[in-house]
Length: 210
Image (cartoon, rainbow, N blue to C red; front, side, top):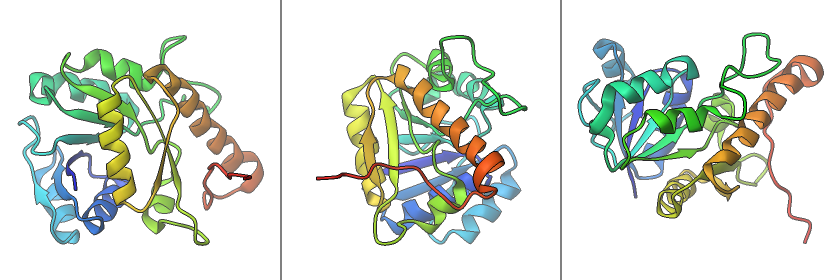
């Protein structure tokens, strides 16, 4: 099993931590507010609490943060993230839900990778799952699909093993620039939520026809 540090204290952090613990992984919760970090860890039997800015205990570090602050947090940690696999779950969507706040031709994951130390490996994952859907897990007897993208093959293998420990199905989409496509899927889901389905009780995945 994996050793996971989750930076963030919101719904996505809680959903990932809960499923990770159920899958037998070691989980560390890290947040700027120590009291809230302790509160979340206490609600998740078995989780520990880390110190913001210190070297995360986990080999895999999950950025369960809004995109607006994710790259800055990675910069603040600096060499403390050396050798870590960094999972970016963010969606850098503009407030009007019509596009992105990232530079043209780039993605949130690529911008975060620029802020990370050279020895860290960023993998895009989980951005196409709403937190409550992730918390609920497999639907109608089939695992949820988690699309991933990253440049380092070993890092993607480790993230895939972590995803499988959650009872989910990893789907490798290619190198890190594919994160742009995954973030567009996140935007698509927000469009479906707003204009068609009017709720977030759904997920997008792959159906194998043969």
